[in-house]
Image (tube, rainbow, N blue to C red; front, side, top):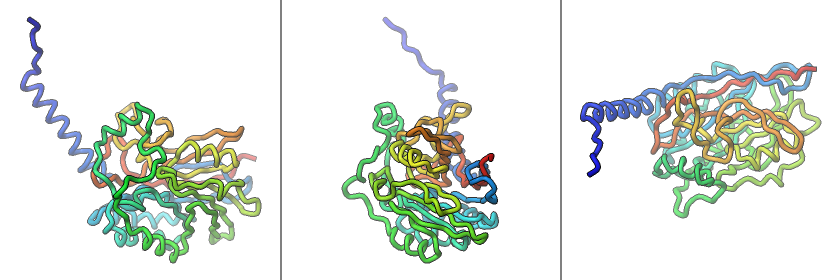
Length: 314
């Protein structure tokens, strides 16, 4: 008769306590340990003055998140040349006023924005293990599927109107321009969220605008079809969010999932992308929030990024 192996009681208690401590740290400490990352990118035309761009992403505001609101307001002290918001501002339909209050000081600066699926629809309760299962099966989260029937509508229209009134440029399947205090004109091309198949690249195809001082591309979710299109059209820089940097990562290993078809090696930070014989810089923000139903981060603290754009070597 086969003997049964039993875990000693002390070991079981220890494992349970360790797991509880990790969950407590992920939810109570790391998910609230906001930080600023600084990145330099050599993408400007030779001789152009450097530009400082603040990228904010995946705020996922829930009503009452006072520490996050204070931290976002304090980012205005960085005095960026312009701000790019790469979407998923909401995780609570009641939180629009708090998003606008938190971003109020930043809305004094030139800026542009795209929306993500969580701006349009309320979050759903979902087992985080399903993301890993879908990664293994090749489904990659929603993978461009429409939201589920009955999804809660978020009041995103008021947020859009406030951004527009502040002078921020909406980039949902369209182009726009920002004129900076120094007189430079930045041309931007943006897409609506590929994660729920709202992207329409055919409406913005054609590449950078020749008469602008600099052109960049903006999207919420960095799906490969979008990165390929932007890169083949010769955009020097693509800004995206959505991935949360993997959110629950393994120390010294990294992310397990990206919630899209981007590889985990590029789940956050600066990398490059090649398509159509061309190469673009890609910056993916790990974001500063979480879905309200999974309010945890591990080995992946919440962040915003100050990108310093530098001239390319001549």
